[in-house]
Amino acid sequence: MKILVGIKRVVDYNVRIRVKPDGSGVDTDGVKMSINPFDEIALEEALRIREAGLAEEVIVVSLGGNECQQQLRTGLAMGADRAIQINTDEKQQPLTIARAFLKVVEKEQAGLVLLGKQAIDGDNSQTPQMLAALWGRPQASFVSELKLTGNTATVKREVDAGLETIEVELPAVISVDLRLNEPRFVKLPDIMKAKRKPLDVIGMDELGVSAENDLQISHYTPPPARGKGIMVESTADLVAELKNRGLV
Image 1 (tube, helix red, strand yellow):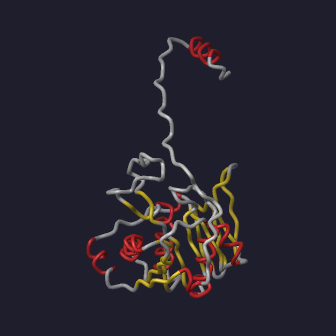
Image 2 (image 1 turned 60 degrees about the vertical axis):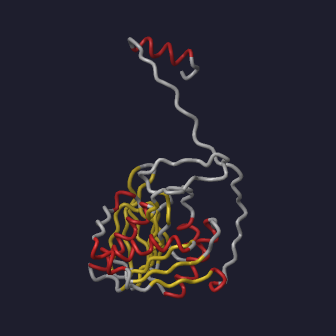
Image 3 (image 1 turned 180 degrees about the vertical axis):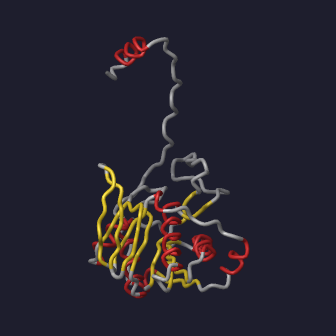
């Protein structure tokens, strides 16, 4: 079985986000970029499945310009067997990304697709669900535990009421949550080995996918600064202050 893992290049989660002075976007000059944390967890789970003898190959896929090859090489250093870059210089919406991923899934005949539940930049949480719908295969989202048995995946997923256990038939799309695992540390020798692993570049036109970006973001602005807190002497003072502010 082949496992396909989608990864996205995002601003590292430890970096303080800065908006450009003209509000045209996020300032990424000199900023550390990394694999989206949820995608990194998805890749770690794929590697563990392969190491358990339940898969033969792990393939990482990313959509973007040549800059995303850095994250693909990191995925290879973690242990992925191959990497595929879907080449585009334009920022794509989730539906276009799902359509492009579908073409790669069909070409590779993947038995399982693992994705992060969302990207920490757009926070859309849409691509896994759209991919499953386009593919016509089952999906399991927000997964915090995964077990494969034959052609069935048993998962625990986080829902508003707690945890839900479901079974899905493979091939399937699974989006993962933070509690699934802790990604491994990438060592320098593995980074050097990754340079020799295959990285294929495919154009959007080669996949027969056209960009349909109906959503346009016209302006970015940082969140408003939080006001200072106040100290109160008693519970009664707290309740009175909340009433004065119309909060209770």
